[in-house]
Every structure is written in C-alpha cells, then in structure tokens.
Amino acid sequence: MMKRGITYKQILRGRNVLVVGLGKSGKAAAKALNEAGAVVTIQDSKTPDKLDTQFLQYMQNEEIRSYLGSVPEDMTAYDMLVLSPGVPTSLGYIQEARDAGIEIIGELELAYRLGEGNFVAITGTNGKTTTTTLVGEIFKASGRNTAVVGNIGNPVVTQAMDSTEKDWLVTEVSSFQLETAVDFRPVVSAILNLTPDHLNRHGTMEAYGAAKARVAANQSENEFLVINLDDKQAFGLSKDTKATVVPFSRQEKPNFGAYLDGTKIIVKDFDGTEHFICDRSDLRIIGDHNVENVLAAAAITFFAGIDPEVISAVIKEFPGVEHRIEFCGRVDEVDYYNDSKGTNVDAAVIAIKALKDGIILIAGGDGKGQEFDELAEHFDGAVEALILLGRDAPIIEEAARKAGFTNIYNCKDMPECVRKAAELARSGEKVLLSPACASWDMYANFEQRGRHFKQCINEMLK
Image (cartoon, rainbow, N blue to C red; front, side):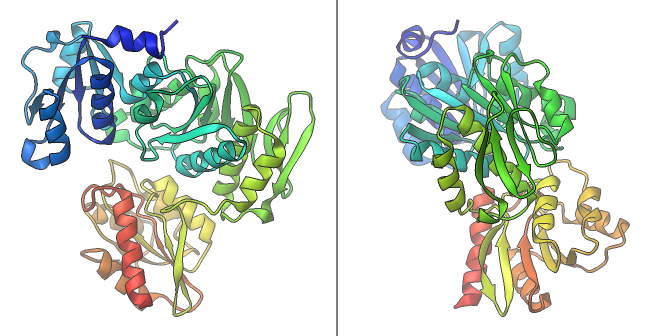
C-alpha cells in the first residue's frame, strides 16, 4: 500500500527529482518537493527570458538547478520525474528515463502521496468545471473542510501537501493528469461523458478513454465511481473498476443512483429509497447537459454521505461558472453568451442545443486535430450566421460549406467578431462565443479569451 503524508515526505528527503514543465502545477510541484526535502531540478522548454521572474528568483534563492531551453544530458541522475500535465509522455528524454526504470508521475499523483486528504475526482470530456464547482459548494455547505482544486485552476499539490484525513479535495482531473497517475485513489470518482478530444495527444479514442478510466483504477468496493449511464462509451469505462458503480441518467431509472423522473431530479439509495432533490425548473443553469451535471453532482455528494436537503438547497442557488454558457448581458435586445470553455466540438454542440435557435456563433482557434463535420450538422435551424477567427477557421469553414451552410464571416480578432455579430444579430437573437477549439493560437488560455469577449461586450454597453 502506498505510503502517504509524513511517511512519504520522509521517503522523498534527499531524493533527486526532476520537475518537467513550469506551468502552474509544475511550479507548485517544485515548491512542494523542495519543502519536503527532495533535491529538485527543473526542466522547461522555455528559456529564462520567457519565464516568470518571481519564480526564477525563488529558484535562485533555493539553489534549485535548472535546464531552461535545454534537457539534462544524463536522465539516470534522477530518482523520479514529475511531469506537468501539458508535457507529452512520448518526449525522447522522458522515454529515456522510462527505459532506465526511473519512476514517472504527475502533480496529481504527487499531491495524493504528499497529503492524507480524501479525494473526490471528477473527469470527462465536458462538464467537469461546472460539476466540480457545484460539488465543492455542496461539500462546503455540509460543513466539511473542502478545497476545490485541479484542472479548475488551483494546483492540487498546494492544498494537498498538509491535508489530513478530515480534509476533502474536490478535484477536476484531466486525461493529461490521469496519464501519470499510479496509486491515486479517490473516495468518489466520476466520469461524466466521453467524446473526441485531445486526440492530437492521445492518438485514439481508446487511449483517451483508457486515460480517463484511470480515475477509478485503484478504487475498492467501499469507494464509488459515479458514471453516465446514457453515454455508453463512457459507461463502458466502468467495466474494470472494483469500485461500486453508481449510475446517473436523464433517460433511464437505474436501481440506485441519480436520475430524471419527468422533471424531478431524484437520488435513489441502495435500499430503493427515493430522495427528491429539486425540479428541473428550479435550476438556474440551462440545457440538458447541465441537468446531467446536476445529476452527477447529486450522486457524488449523496454517496459521499451528504444530506439530501443540503444538496437540494445548494443546487437550487447555483448560478453556473464563468466561461460556460455564461450570460454576459443584453445589447439592443440581443443576448450575449460566453462559452469560451467550449474548447471542443462536443462542448460547442451542447451550447448550441442549450440556446436552441437564433444563434450568431463565434468559433475558431486551435482545433487540436478535430473534425468539425458534427459541429456543422447542428447549424441547421439553430445557427443564423457563423463568425470565424483563429488558426483553424478555414477547417471549420470547409466543414460548414460541406454541410450546405454559407452565411460565414471571417474576422481577424475578437473585437471585429463582436462588432460583426452585433451588426448581424436581430432583436431576440443570441450571440454565442463557443469556439469548439482551444485558445492557444491567440490567447494564453480560454479564460483570457472569454474575458476579452466580455470586455468587447462591456464596451458596447457603455
């Protein structure tokens, strides 16, 4: 059994550890390892002039060795590698370390080992941030000592480092983080759905699904995997876990779990007792996908032992999260929605379905190797005009024209997109930023893109 907490910190003392990648999680991992007494070396593809000066100063003060813009000559000098999520495990020098038998983990695994807290781990292609945020709010309302961490923006290791058995870490986990999980074992895990994404990294849907399934790989029958019964590809990932599988469904009524009964959101216990959580009309967040997110959150929190009345009260008040079909305001009787977190085709389709019709869609960016035919198939009867920006705009345009959609406009940047949308939109229509693409070709992240969109709207409101 994996040693955790103080015992693992003692194991780390004096060990040579290479931290690869200086994003948020890489910096947090380096600090945690240094604090635990490991001998830390840092590698990043960026040269020092492109890195955070404050962290460079920290490295200098702590006498941390680094390879910035270069790689170590001898990988056998290290006892362990800790990879940031954005670092592909296929890189040559990482493969060299693996061939030499050196342990390779990620920041999520390191966080699990360094602390003693209880993990709730939520993964899936879409809905992770909304569900994780909602679960975190329910946990806090129940009086548990809770931190909401992970791919949601807060490095896991920072909160996990000194966590005790009384603490709960509600964690949004990505396939990239799960790729390097070894002993990670949540009390409750969840797989919300599975659709094509990150295929430029994983290669195939099978490999992508296998990474997601790792969230429940180490769980026992006393722990829970909450999983979408309506998504057969996702549900298939439950076949190899020893965890108690708890289904949630909009379309069926499982023997236990969470489901939609007409318009009622119900959680059913193992003994068949039904607990009414709320009516669909009580929700402040829109769309079928958000009903699924609520069902998942209700199942996760109920089977984690939280009172149904607490779950109900929080769900009814939950306003949603920034950048996920976020209502941004009304200008000249046109509603504007920021769905910058819609970084893949499936997420954009979900947003289109939620808003139904009369949509002026702004899309484009870094397509991550996706096909856009499915996106274009959902334009008919819903999307009035398509405004494109970013690197892979021509690929989306080609898919749209192939589907017979021709009302397309290309713009050079976000302000031009918003101006064009305002010009095209008629009273009662909706302008939706749902890019179906990552933001990396033009922005540091989807948050920056979404805030720029909102800034453009606010300038019209003045």
